[in-house]
Image (cartoon, rainbow over the protein chains, first blue to last red):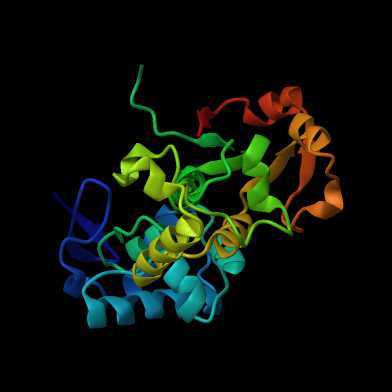
Length: 105
Length: 156
């Protein structure tokens, strides 16, 4: 665990860069987090996924898998991979400040 | 060996039984979810997975499958394979694991390459339009190695 500064805030992240305390996340951090993942700028479609990740995490305590995202976020699997080429569930979780989803599917 | 992250995998699916198909599909889908480039290569009875007429009726092997812990004669009972397949599919549905046709479609949508093995296609007397639209090409073993270059190869 390390403390890092994102958009001017002190934030605790794990070895892989995921937030340890999702409640430390604020929307103004997302563009910086996205840039670290090679995504710039964040479009409205990216935001739709990020907001969905936060909502799922708040309701279920865990982030959705790609399959769940594809079925329920309003963004298809194909488009998810276009938006987040390095893995939609994983990268969107990092940008949304929630833990890495652990599903196998 | 260094601990460099895996960048690319090429997965061969050679079996046509339910328990022989899912592991390769899960590995391919999981690779893409991690941002790893993935190719799926279907050979021998694995071709059933991408065969339009067969991909919805892939069954669990109930004969010659000691993992089921069934007496051999029970496994050979008429309808046993269908019954066990339904049971397995029901269990997987509860865990929200997609059916094989849906899974392959999803894997194609992740940007993974889907290929059929030319030798097997010729052997079974099949052609391109026998396969689901996600199949990008029918390729030779040599072409497979070209596509797999720079990555890991997994045979299932």
